[in-house]
Length: 250
Ligand code: NAP
Image (spheres, rainbow, N blue to C red):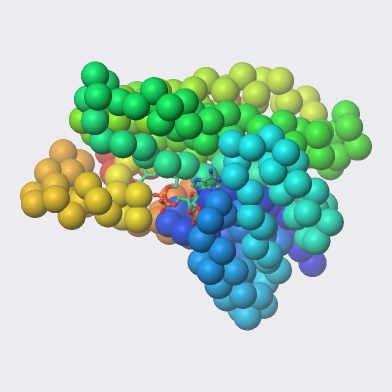
């Protein structure tokens, strides 16, 4: 029997894909959301189904309110009822000093990373709140240690979007706690994915990050998926409004 549906935004690649695989293995039906990489999302959903799980791929730009509402409608119709949301969709933006940042790109970054998280939480509250006929559930927002450390040089707007995600996580958790919805965030350190490829391919970059990380290495997407699966599960039933740091000690 399914443990219920979890929608994973940005589920097609990287950390989100690892979370989709892990939640499917835990018995959840999984909606793999993507923005443009349909092949990766559909391939992942097919692989989950081939392994005996339940999954579907759903396109939506999380910065678009109408697209987000359609995502939730379509996912619930195909795989419902909803019992969880993982907000993983995100972009790091341009690496540039503030003086050279493009204003439109800053606005877009906030629209995806911060406002996208809020738009999805709105739709989740509408469907999971016990005050609105839902059966409760859990939300996991993917932040970053950049929210507190400032991040790599040149990504101040990205760090600020994640600060917004953490403030929102606490406020939303307070708001829906008595509606049987728990809300937490994970702040990963540097994880080996497409997002960090460009930076890590610069000479010496990987070694510099390893040297500043107490555990002496980068993280794997599966290690973040493990934390997400725990926060999603009933084992974390008394945990809400918190940020779990998974950064190798940074
Ligand atoms: P990634 O490999 O680049 O994957 C990004 C995912 O987000 C893809 O599935 C992408 O969809 C989706 N996405 C991007 N913009 C979207 C939009 N507007 N609407 C819907 N989906 C969108 O990135 P990642 O490294 O796994 O990062 C995932 C999350 O972890 C992000 O929130 C990131 O900020 C956070 N994080 C990452 C690290 C790290 O070191 N990698 C560290 C801390 C936090 P498509 O496949 O369609 O492009």
